[in-house]
Image (cartoon, rainbow, N blue to C red; front, side, top):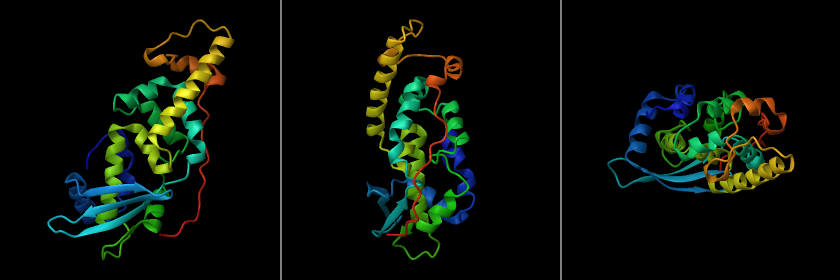
Length: 225
């Protein structure tokens, strides 16, 4: 499995699945067998081609939680922390961003309940009795690997699209800029892209721009489609 700061957070979850399924899923994901991923509002539908055959399976992977209503809160975090946003554009995970998400139990970072949820709700048209079959796991791995090099893509797993989030970040940045101008602050240097490069130490001292902490997702008792 591809290792990185985000993928490493999934290791406890993946340790709970059948090792042979995980090995097969890794081969499928690395070979490009995961195709036609489509968001349906509650999860992701995908087609996974079976290696060495013409057969393909339909997979449905549930979102980890529903954070769609909190998209602006997440955008506000990123507007307050342009270093996190800059890391995203560089294709890297800022360790402090990952720690923030983990500490506040934002479910783009897997939790103890994640494997249970995936096992209870994921579906595949193959003959495996285990819901976490190689095809479901291949779709999950494809998402994890995408998010490894595109951090904000992790929010797709909780119902927030990257483009929507970036649009909201721009709006929230303008609000913060206006507030800084209204307060007469002149000690905030402007960075490239129009973002303000406040230091983390300054943010921690200023309650007005401190990230909000944990947001509560909407959790529904879905049934498999």
